[in-house]
Amino acid sequence: MNPEGIIGKSDAIRKVVDLARRVAKSASTVSITGESGTGKEVFAKAIHNWSPRAKKPFVAINCSAIPENLLESELFGHAKGSFTGAVEKKVGLFEEADGGTLFLDEIGDLNLSLQAKLLRVLQEREIKRVGENQSRPVDVRVIVATHKDLRQEVAEKRFREDLYFRLNVIPVKLPPLRDRREDILPLAEHFLKKYNAINGTQVQGFKKSAKEFLLTQSWRGNVRELENAIERAVVLSSGTEIDVAAFTLFDEPALQDAFLGGEDKKNAFVFHFGDEVEPLHELEKKYVQFVYERKNRAKELTAKALGIDRKTLYRKLQEIDPQTSI
Image (tube, rainbow, N blue to C red; front, side, top):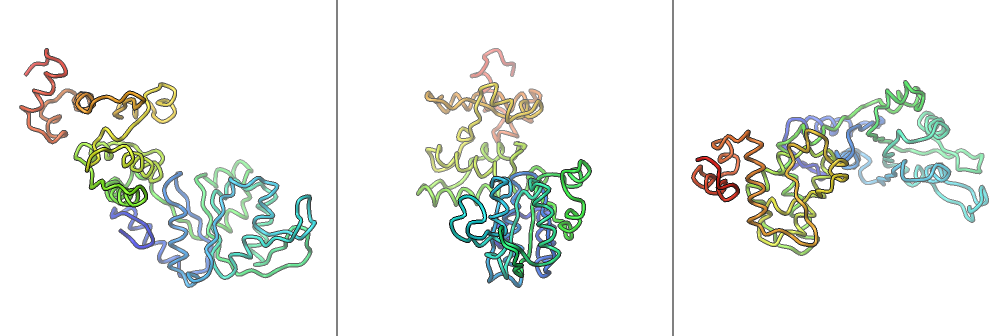
């Protein structure tokens, strides 16, 4: 585990951590890119905490979560009476972050007008509150993040080229979880401890089948999706260890299509967890059959994957289908 909540031992994550540590010492703007759920805000906080600004504020805002007509006021503040509802003056986030770091998440969702104003702030190091003519100096280190390809956004005239180059001084690209699979189990253990503490539970670990399940998933939602899966498993688990049955995926076709693509459907162990739950031995049968098919009905490979001997596998397969040949 790395400091600042960054968990992982893979080469991919170590390289990003090393880059983040080096850029933290500078005052340069950092652009963090990566798929949704890869931990962009975690890295932004780490860069701040490793920087000389660590004792000053770290202020974060998701640009896609604030309506366009309010975002300018959130960022730069406003004067009293500057627009309907502005009953008193407001200090913006740039001023709140003075001396520290402002993290602008989903920067790709800024409209072109705000992009122009942000560019001016980055160049001049001063802001104007909405409804004021007075310029106010600010000393803020800006870190931005997006899951979008800003170069493509520039090409399609949705993002200013001059702002893109101003923001992209030091690019940091976070790898998706599927490219750092050796980090899946350490992350799962971390989230297990976290949700044990939150829920007052005493789940001690993962059974082998559960670990194998975690390692075979595509994790399209990356670390965020994994965390949600572990939280759900902690809540649903009735034993001291999490079994594969605690990981639930809905089997309604529409939801399967939403979460699983063609190849993912083939590779995912899917079962329904509704009002009437199946006994564990029935879920075990389905999982054995799933692995058996995944291994192209090769009994030796199936037994090895399940962590059982061939004799036990033969018995389980005959329980599923008495016509199974030995």
